[in-house]
Image (cartoon, rainbow, N blue to C red; front, side, top):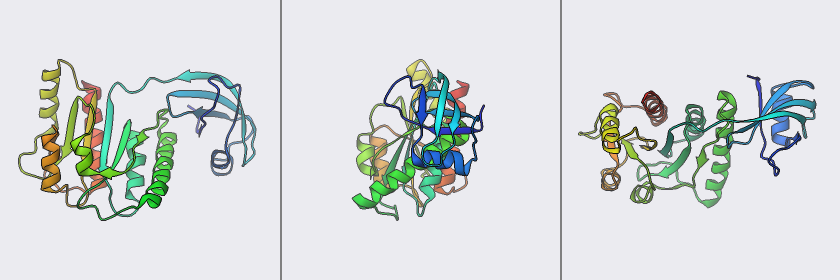
Length: 251
């Protein structure tokens, strides 16, 4: 696989030539130092890739000739991550790692214990940064599918109406949380097949509040233990997605 990857969302379905925007051109030519004749995989974030040859190494408008196109199927399982906002820029790292693991959707949540509160303007700017982080993750791991990053909402609002999933999980430090394997086995038995659409909810520092947990459980979320140690929220997100992806892929 080529070391060079670039994002492009063309108006036409079968472009013969690709002209990258200034951001992607700079990253390809100035940062990655691609030169004329280099093979570049251009992807649209929706499973389509174009194998291209760099014909003009402009840092503002790089041009590429399309050799052929290919389409990658999505992963057989659809994992959504509902993640409470942590402090600082940690959410960007979570988005990047979640993309590398193969999350299909990321829902940022504002919990009662969230220490970061965003107004509409800051939320829009953060959303742009999160999309950039997802793009970086996709380029890093060769994932041609970008996760859909939903607008910020409160945890209580989202838990009350999360949408349709085969299985809804919430990482929990509270007594009574179950092991993941046991819940997956029960779900497979009830469905007659492994769950395909699964939601993981990960709390902020200090976990979700009892009130939020109660709303989640009333909506059918299963409290899951991540082990005896208290994990940082970014560690919990990567750990939870990794073990879930592995278990679903092995089913």
